[in-house]
Image (cartoon, rainbow, N blue to C red):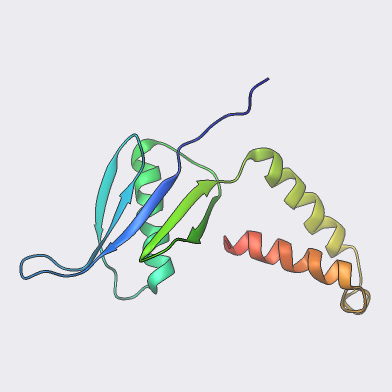
Length: 122
């Protein structure tokens, strides 16, 4: 069985011009959109919001994971459902330990950090 190949989304900052405000351009092979910059959000959250809006317009769902690229761009992909299941199991395992046990074991500290990062979309 071949793995499912999905399209990535790339978001790029576009500075303001004399006629247009700052914006984020979200591009996938299927479609692209431009979203106005939201000054209530930070840089990463503006990029995430643009990627989420494009995904919603395309009817895509799932956990969006992003990372920075060279320049003022980010790349976004969806976490496969199998990885979601592993993440849930790891989170349940960590929750079963007392906090003092976790902080004393470097492997559990690493596992907890991985879960926190995945939940934060990092």
